[in-house]
Each structure stands twice: as structure tokens, then as C-alpha cells.
Image 1 (tube, helix red, strand yellow):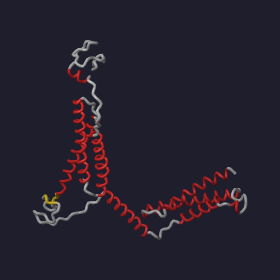
Image 2 (tube, rainbow, N blue to C red):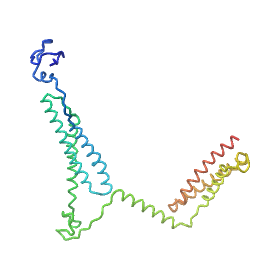
Image 3 (tube, rainbow, N blue to C red):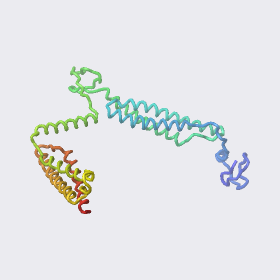
Image 4 (spheres, rainbow, N blue to C red):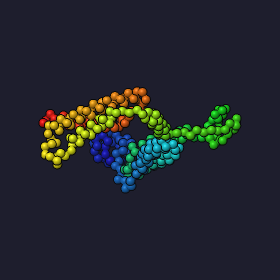
Length: 294
């Protein structure tokens, strides 16, 4: 054995260390005994930790969120995860117990105590939370009469107290409510637009025409027709002129659309106006660069 004070080898039956003279307590003598290498592997703590994370992330977080979003009863993933948590607690307890028995037999413990404690205590905490959630959800198996306010069974067709017919309203999930709201807004917008089909914005067509002409003049392969046409000064001036014309009509189209929106709540061909605006700015920058670098 080894003296815990001077760390020198001494006989196993020593009461005092003959090197430093310190008295050895029973606990110190026991801790200084070298444990034999354990031929068996204790993997219960790792298994318990694995079950804990599967239950926490796989069932409580992921499946619980999916079930709640879709509108399915979330008690199902909570009940499954509770079973896994109980398994994690058992694995953690088995790991601690097996390590204790190995130490008593003189073998080195091979289990991870940190993993075991996490498996036991964290699983116990989340299990209690899940049980509380299930009990709260279990309460909704009952409901109340809309006329007399008395508690009745969830499957009742009529109230047992006043005889009023039970009328249930289907509960919609958040995603269903969101999609319904978007659908109503879209239909409302379409209805507004149909009421004002006679409203026109002439600047949109003019801006799109000028931008397309400038784009063709700038990127058409003129060299196949005659060399030097595409890079000549008149061509560069023509591109810039058409693009400045397009910029002007895009600005006017936006102003007219804003005026229509203030009166009727709709904007005409928003996507076309945005595309024409981007195209006109892009060609204007290229045309001005080509003109000033001539």
C-alpha cells in the first residue's frame, strides 16, 4: 500500500508509516489499496444518458412540437418519453450499484458516475414535468355545459343536468389559422382588384418597353452585322437615352400606383414594376459607364 502523506510504499498491515510516522486511519488504509483492473465493462450509465437524450429531443421537443402543430394529442409522445426516462433512471441506478459492488470486490469501477447522475436526476425531473403535463391534459376529457355551466363528459351529446344539446366547435391549429388568414387577405385583394379593372397605369408599359429596347441595344451581338456598331458613341448614347426614359416612366408608374393604393387599396402589376425598376437601374449603370469610358 501507499502512504497518503508521503506517498511511499509501506506494508499492507501498517498502522503508522515508517517513513513519515503519520498514523493511518481505516478509511485512508482502504483508499490507499490499489484496485485490480476490472475485466467487465459497465455501460449502463452511457445507455441511460442515450435514453435520456432520445426522450428529451426526439419525443418531447421534436415529436411534441409536430403533434401540437398538426393538432394531434401531445400526450402520446409524452407518455413514450416518460417510459424512456424511467429506463434512463433504472440504467443510472444500475451503473452506480454495479460500480459500488466492483469496489467492494476490489475491482476498479468502469462506469461513468457523471453520466449516471445525469441519467437519474435529470430524468426524474423531466418525468415529473411530463406526468404533470399529462394530468393537465387529462383534465380536458371533461367539459362544461354552455348553458348551466355544470361539468359533463367529453363524449356527451346532451347535458345530464339541463338537457341542452352539446355543440362542439372544431379547434384550429396555429398553422390553419395563419393559412386561413392569408387566404382571406388574398381573396379580399382579388375582389378589390376586380372591382377596379377599369383602372390603368399607362406608365408601366412605357417603362417596360424602354427598358427592353435599351437591353437589346446594349447586349445584342452587333459585331455579327457590322464591326464597331455596338461599341460606337451613337449606340452608347442611344442606350443611355432609352434607359433614362425608362427610369422616368418607372418613377411615374410608382407614383400612380401609390395614388391608386391610397384610394382603392391595390397596386397594379407590382412585380412588373419591380422588375422594370431593377432592369432600368442595371442598364443605366452599364450605359453611363460605357459612355464615360469611351
